[in-house]
Every structure is written in structure tokens, then in C-alpha cells.
Amino acid sequence: MDSLIAAAARALAAGDSLGALKRVGLRDDPPALALRGIAMAQLGEYPRARELLRRAARGFGAHEELARARCVVAEAEVALAMRDLGGSPRTLAAAAAKLDARNDRANALHARLIAVRRLLLLGRLDEAAAALAGLDAHGLPLSLLAAAELAAAELALRSLRTAPAQAALTRAHEAAERARVPALLAEVAEARAAFDRPAARRLEAGQEQLLRLGEVEALLASGALVVDACRRGLRAGATWQPLAGRPVLFALARALAEAWPGEVDRQLLIARAFRVRRPDETHRARLRVEIGRLRALAAPFARIEASASGFVLTPHAERVVVLLPPIDGDGASLLALLADGAAWSTSALALALGASQRTVQRALVELETAGRVRAIGLARARRWLAPPLTGFTTNLLLPAALPLG
Image 1 (cartoon, one colour):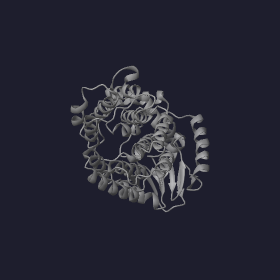
Image 2 (cartoon, rainbow, N blue to C red; image 1 turned 135 degrees about the vertical axis):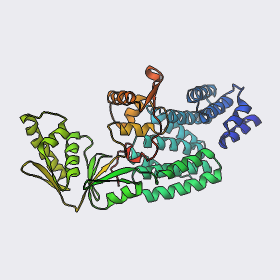
Image 3 (spheres, rainbow, N blue to C red; image 1 turned 60 degrees about the vertical axis):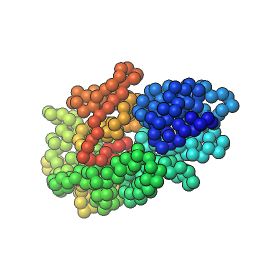
Image 4 (cartoon, rainbow, N blue to C red; image 1 turned 90 degrees about the horizontal axis):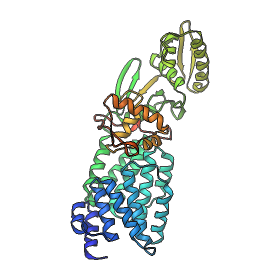
């Protein structure tokens, strides 16, 4: 490795992308192309960075597997920054295995952290937790240690475990300070700010109150019957009943919980669940069927009893609380994903939300009409952006495969 390449690599490790470009910006040999690609990625020029990294990977010979594997890892990180989540994770896993085989533990760990961050974006928390548990950052660069602790903190926050999240962020802050990387320090500061912002709204007996993440965690552990409009389900203590795939049943449960301890008129339940203005006998018959289904699913939490004019919720717990997201609307999860400031493709949003691309496209068009998101590019190159959702944290709006707990 010549002196200019070595100096550029040291500059990139310290976050000085311009300093690196000054040294290798006019060179077209594979090592210089790789460093130029990483520098362009640090400057936010992701398409150009990707092109340079691919050229570098093609330029390395068959005997330079280690260098090619490093290019694969760098390109995977660029793809993650571009929110291109559709690629196969096997390529990155193979690159990590090659790096391990060549005793490049730092870059192998970096590759696996990229895989963990991808899983977190997709809401696959159980897989992310398993992958993170197998990582060993001991003895590796402080910047990687900080990144690993940030991933652990995000996993804990997404699972609503605030104490482990705060501990991980403290360790991340210490490592980032010692590494002296401003971008890492800023990321840690932003994650810490989530604890002080409102994360949800509590509706109980007609009274609404903003809650921070720690207060939401305490509420869910209190034993109260919580109708969770953030994750779409019922919870009491450790018992969780998801209703995300049963929108009619969830609408009925929420209406009954909002009216508790009172009853809800049948006409109002029909309007809330079926969204009709003039119900007829078919809607009333359907209401009886859906209430029966809800009774069966809600049996561990409460009874649903008929009254003269409607239905009333009788919980096994002492209180009933409705947990509402900090913002209303069907596009709340979309806005939460877009709030990170990155440009997302429709396919990546669909992957993260577990929905069809057509469903996501319709929601994006509605949000664009309302002026809440904007599109850049055309056709397959189209990406979606939204302004940051300031004033509250979006953790409870982000997709997750695990029930809270």
C-alpha cells in the first residue's frame, strides 16, 4: 500500500472525506477507486459512491479476494444508506466469511453490523437480536464498538426496553467520544433525545395525556388492559393479542375501550367498524358476527356484554387504556420511516411495512396530495422524502415483528 492510499484511508477512518479525496481524487487504480467511493458515500453522493465501489471491485484481480470483499461491504453500506433493501443478504454474509477467513475481524464485524441494521429497518427484531448476540466487538476499533452499541440501543428501544437502551447509549457515547467521530456523536445524541420526546398518547376515561417512552413501558407493565393503536393489538401484562391483520375487530375493540366504562351504541359501532353512513340489517348481522369473533379473541382480557342499545367492555383488569400514536392517520408508519431523512423507494417501504407495493403507493399518493411527502426521480429511480417529524419520537410507529415486551 503506497503512502497516499494509507493517508487517505486514515483520513476516512477519522471522518475526513475531503482530506481523503485530496489524496486520491485523481487516481483510477482499484484501491483509490474504493477509497474515493467511501469518501463520496460520506459526503452523501450515494449513486456515485456505488459506481466507484463497483469499478474498484471489478478492478481487483482474482487473487485479491480480501479487497473485493471489502468493496462488497462498502457497497452494502451505501445500499443501506440509499434504503435499497431488496438485495440478497447472502452476498454480504459471504463477504463477511471471506474477511473472517483472512483475519480481517474489523471489516467482518462491520459487515455483520450492516446486516443487523438492515434487519432493524425491516422490523425483524428477533433476527436482529440473534445476529447482534453473536457479535464480538472486543478489541476492535472504537467506532465499530460505538456502532454496535447504537444497534443494541435501537433494538432495545424498538422492543420498548428503556433501561437496556439507555445503558447501551451510554456505552456508545463513551466509545464515540474516544473515537472522536462527530457523526457517531451526533447519532448518539439524536437517539438519547428520543427518551425526552412524547412517544404516544394515553386515552383513559375520556382524558388524553402525552407519554414518553419510559411512561409507555410502565403503562404496559402495569397490568391494565391496553388497546394499543400503535401496534394494533390488545395487551394486559405479558399477554399480547395482535389484531393488525383484523382491522374490523381492532376498530370495535378501540371503540369499546374509548367508551369504557360506558357502553357503545350499535349504530356507532357499525359506523366505526364498517365505515357506512346508512346501516341496514346486513350490517347489524355482520356486527353480531364480528362481536362474537372479538369476544373469543378478547376472552383472556375482558368480557363483551350486550346491552339494550349496544355493547359494553368489562375488563378483567381494573382499568382500560387506549394507547394512541403521537400522530393520527393510516400513513403514520410511512411517515415514521421517512422521518429519518433518507430517500426511500416504494419497494423498500413495502418491505419494511410488510405490505404490498400497490398499498404503499396508494398511501404515498394520499400523503403527497396532503403535502406531507414529496417524490424525487421518475419510474424505478423514484424516491420518497418527508420532513422530520419534530417534537416526538417515532419508535412506536416503526414496524416490528415482535410484540412489545
